Image (cartoon, rainbow, N blue to C red; front, side):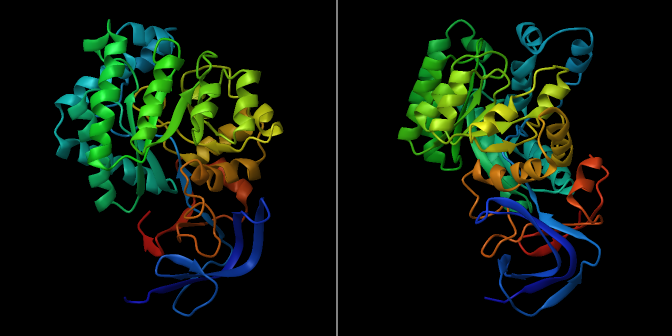
Amino acid sequence: MTRFVMILENIGNLTTFNPDSGEVETISNTSLVIENGIIVENGSGEFIDCTDCLVTPGFVDPHTHPVFLDLRVDEVAMRKAGATYEEIAAMGGGINSSINGVRNASVDELIERVSKRMDQFLKLGTTTVECKSGYGLNTEAELNSLKVIHEVNKIHEMDMIPTFLGAHAFPPEFAHDHDGYVDLLCNEMIPAVAEQGIAVFCDVFCENGYFNVDQSRRILNTAKEYGLTPRLHADEFEDSGAAELAAEVGSVSADHLMAVSEKGIQHLAENSVIATLLPGTTYFLGKDTYAPAQKLMKRGIEIALATDFNPGSCHFKSMPFIIHLACKHLGMAIEQAFASSTYYSAKALNLEHVVGSLTIGRKADIIVWDVEKLSDIPLHDSDLPIKMMIKNGKAIDS
């Protein structure tokens, strides 16, 4: 194997979460050695001058929905006119309006769309993305969506972590037979997904008007039987008991949580479920109620942050913008939001030993910033002062 070594020298400030101390730490005037894509203790090789630069891990985004044909831009005008997410869905919009695009598109067409979206994520400093299916909602289209994620992952610098989200909504053909669709999920779709061998996780949109707690429990327990790790959309609009279910089934993460109850928080804390918060969705939908980050943290619950990029309710791909929203609306300190966008977001994907921090043995997914301090990052949302992106130990065009 050819040995490739890169050394970042004269680093102004290296800022990373340290899993050993449990703190975000900054080391000034230091260097970082990378060998064959992995951070190592010492070595000699190509030198990259990082004078007056900030060096951080690449961002990890643990909740996105990138496999769709087109953005639902018409819903923006509907929301400006006063329609809620739930009302738009009741009128035939929302998730179901994306189904036809995915079902009728070719795999190659979706690969092209998703690849371009990954380009944009990478330019914004994200180096690992969880990617959900969920806009096909039949066996063939869901398998094709996962295939799209798999194929883009093979050709793109981005690391893409596939999640099966067949339980995203009830498709039109099952509008009056919800239990029939749950039967299809458990008896046909999940076994087919497991046989395909692409998905790592299984997610469910557990919410009033979508999948109730009993249906979600059945789906996630079936997924576990087939080797998929559960995660859950939980208590986004109303307290449905989804947080308690996430704890019960051993979900690695409960996501959204804007309406989580005190009981739900207790169950998450007692079962070490990570809370993945998505302030971009609240902001994009024009709502005022953000997830109770302070309550969650006071109970010792680990917080991850994510964009929730999707075609309808959140078009943001920028983790620095999510950090800005977390500081402004969730009351998080910049160091907390940064750790939640790197280390803890990796932990929400069971990848904290692989990415999310600049420590020995982790992958060298790195941002070299043309700023000196961590607090400068959330001042930018799209025009980011990135000097260099390093993915798997190699400099890439950003």
